[in-house]
Amino acid sequence: MISATSLAGLECGFEHAVTGAGRDGGLLGAIEYSSRVAGPIVRDGHPFMAMPMGDDEVTPFAEVWRTTTGVVTGQHRGLAYACDGEYLFLCGRTEEDADLVTATEEAYLAAFEVVRLLGYPHLARMWNMVHRINEPDERGGDVYGRFCKGRALAFERGGVPAELLPAATCVGSHGGGVAFYLLACRTPRATHIENPRQTPAYRYPPKYGVKAPSFARATYLAEPDGTGRMFVSGTASIIGSETVHKGDMTRQTTTTLENIAILVGRENLSRYGINADLTLRDLDAVKVYVKHKADIPMARRICADVFAEDAGVAYVNVDICRDDLLVEIEAVASRVHPS
Ligand SMILES: C=C(O[C@@H]1C=C(C(=O)O)C=C[C@H]1O)C(=O)O
Image 1: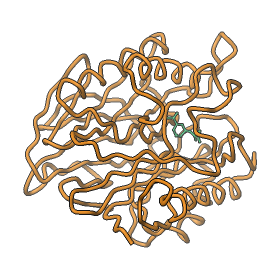
Image 2 (image 1 turned 135 degrees about the vertical axis):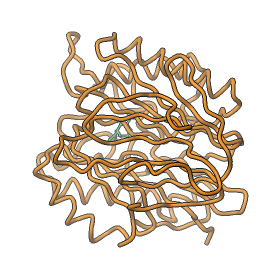
Image 3 (image 1 turned 90 degrees about the vertical axis):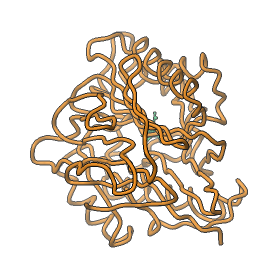
């Protein structure tokens, strides 16, 4: 195992290979970041999906969500899911050649149906990996814009208001249409958090796409024992709604890290009634998405100085949602203690 962050039932880790269910419970889901497309399926008692997120030289890993209780699994309209009484994990994929707006909307609506029918209506975290994310489409937009439109339509039809949008990531992939996965909760304990240095993404101006991206900058889950868990969305070198430091990998990386530090720091959290002070050293399950493979060593050097030595940090070579972004970082902070 490379790393693990654990708390009252749920544990997320990056593993070299999926090694089977935990001692006392089950596997809620496993997502392979590799060079192949597979699933979504329920396999060996848990949902599984593989996404092509690099070439063969990039070390594959599996993001594994374990729970201390037993899980119930199922499949619904092409989605694979598992739930444990408090958390639901779900993964899905659209066809590569499908109309992206409609396919995304339908896949998201199918996911909303699962969370509603099974009773896990509180979305906590979503990930989206979109093949050809920056390619222009025939209507003067790009593939990401079409994905955002389909997703926004699904949230509108699902009746989800902007303030309930969860933390998310949307980055490129090397194939397989749109792959997505999510975590949702049975009890309402999510607080969705914005960054004072960044325009809420759902209010981005129309020059970034006909429908703004549907996500919050972070989602905080209060745990029954008084601690909490913070999901930090994919964060980039954006101030307000503008990309800053175009073409400069070093400054984009440091600006991204500053954005995250402000997002999770005491001053920002206190605006949401969360009495905690997090720094970059509290983050784990970090993914650093790097557009150009040659920039990975630079990203490693910068990140090695700021994250804790025992933090799990994975580097993934994929495109970012804007052509001028070179790097993006997401993370999880567990066992957040009020201070
Ligand atoms: C980098 C940004 O957005 C990216 C796109 C997201 C999405 O559309 O779900 C979420 C976070 C990032 O992966 C940003 O706008 O700051």
